[in-house]
Length: 258
Image (cartoon, rainbow, N blue to C red; front, side, top):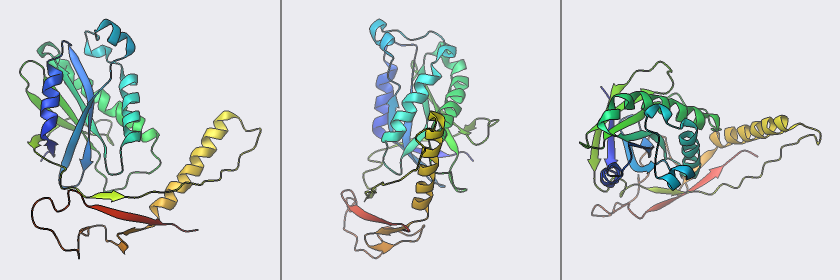
């Protein structure tokens, strides 16, 4: 059985607006959160046009000409700006009917290119329970038909699997917000004569040790240690109505070993 993506309703209008642009195709990223049971897409972000495309108001006429490097660079920048708990869930492409046959091949290449770029900069290794499926969304600019498939980015030979794409209003309105600030003060000893590649390698090793320390930390949520599968609101009085958690922020403290 394929995965189900619950999607913020406003994204449908956003994609529809992009499909009316006088371009053969538009690419972009899908932002959200995944879990074992279901996935949530709360934002879609188009790939910004390059300067020469802005000036000439044109884009390449064939999907083979898609600039993977530009799209992966955009994905890396977006990923660095996302708060904890959100990630790049996939890629979308809006194309004319003439390009629809090539869209899935283009999406597959982009899915793996984006994931490779993001993994390269990631300090934390994925856990066994982490979801490795990523969404490839194809939209026809003429008919507005949507086709959603997933690929397992841990398997280079992965084939496309069908997925459900379901719109839902106020999708993230009741999500809890966890507020936490971590001060980073890392000392990485380096020789003054070290070449640049040693500098980068040693710096990354130092950051990896720090990230491992964070992984092994104890987290206090509103002063309490919570089990991984515990309800964050457990033991608290719930307010009546559907706005109980829309503005509630939980404080998180990170306790690390000295």
